[in-house]
Length: 159
Image (cartoon, rainbow, N blue to C red; front, top):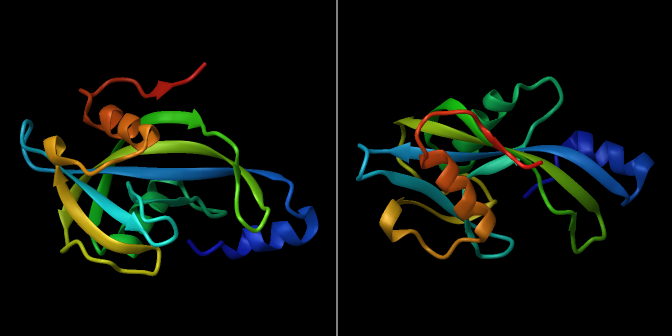
């Protein structure tokens, strides 16, 4: 995943210390209740299947950032319908030593158009999966999907 320019600039002055960053993830849903499909991508850096995601850039609204990220990564146009999960993620230390913690905002999104395909270097595969036929996913992504498929209501957050 390429590092946004503004984070590279922050790193020049802040070094590899902890940065608190706004992250967005999309539970892109297509299909009728009971036969929904979820859009996933296999990451090029670790080979894991995950939801489309990214970092909110300065001046961007989180939902707009998410719509942009989904299109850039998968070629799919979506509409962000609602925030379903808001949480402070576990700290991450990258192989280069950079230390981050993401404030994760997960949105349920509705598929609008486009054929899902690998659209950038962040993924090696992109595809739709039935809710009952998802590949192996981390507990974090399983939780995000569960929140995205739950009936409309208030967003989930951790205390």
